[in-house]
Image 1 (cartoon, rainbow, N blue to C red):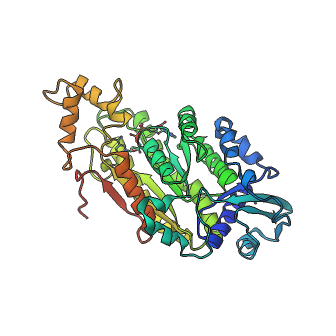
Image 2: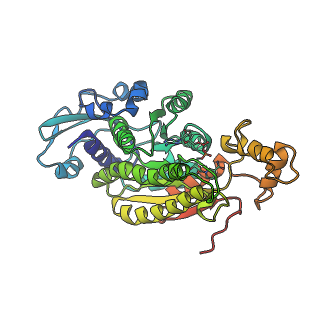
Image 3: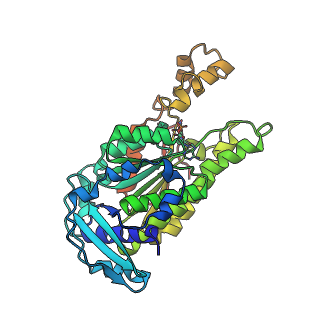
Length: 397
Ligand SMILES: NC(=O)c1ccc[n+]([C@@H]2O[C@H](COP(=O)([O-])OP(=O)(O)OC[C@H]3O[C@@H](n4cnc5c(N)ncnc54)[C@H](O)[C@@H]3O)[C@@H](O)[C@H]2O)c1
């Protein structure tokens, strides 16, 4: 059994015992070679893990005797009966190897025994449903992803900013302080996604919320588009959701073996183009429609592991770089190409697009965050695709 299998079970035992999210951090003597041999960690600031500084706050004298398990499957039961101080440390011996972990909560979360604690907290205010939770946001370095990262941090979560642009992710993490950590990942590459899961297990034990947001647009008509552009769009927008769900879902499932009452979430950032076709943009729309098929199917499968799987389908984020970048943004591209008849300025192009939205503006990060809070709070829904489009797309079935 490896750390990536054990750490989430230990975290699950804490979740079950205290009913609040915790950070479970493997202590120094734990062998982490599997994590460090996998590449993205090379660029990930090791200080991001050390700034969590679990040792600083955790009494190390406790739990010095390891909880021994003869078979790995016994681990949840053994931990259910074990001394689990919070904050504190716990040690487990599996297959003759001892693993030590520290556990603490973020900020002022008050650990109270009892399964109803998390539910009571969620009623306090909507954003409080993510307070203290551990989240990962793929494509978190910019655009909607960065908006979601900010929203989660402001709401008291710990956030992994996971992006192909490792420098951008690290810069944002540095700006946000010790509740954020950067992970360099290519979500379309399985080894890279597996390494991300290992790093999360080796830093916080497990996690509560996956935001699968990384995505690209390669517009083009079906009569002209190169297969390579179609395939890249499919790899990043569609196949990567399978990879992210596979590897992070394993952490959530392992955690659930020790915390059967704890629910976690996988949220796919889809698009209005996952609900209606998009002219000369079939690769994108097809990948997004397909994403909803995966969401529905994974929702059915993962319910037994306490994982809800849902999609958010935003409308256009006109303030984000995709649209507003002064050199490469879609507004300036559409102005240059004359796509909007009569428009002579970027503002006129923007007005043309805003007029298509019943609520007369583009989607913002705050609009998406309200949907994230709703999905996390709503314990009685899974497999849904939630439009956040200002009325531009209305569900018909
Ligand atoms: N911008 C919009 O108008 C809009 C509207 C609806 C839905 N969306 C969806 O929102 C999501 C984010 O879009 P955005 O406009 O903010 O994009 P963006 O281009 O501004 O940011 C995307 C981020 O994803 C990262 N990324 C790209 N490929 C990656 C990979 N293989 N592995 C890891 N990270 C990768 C990029 O480095 C970047 O930081 C996408 O899924 C997109 O389809 C966007």
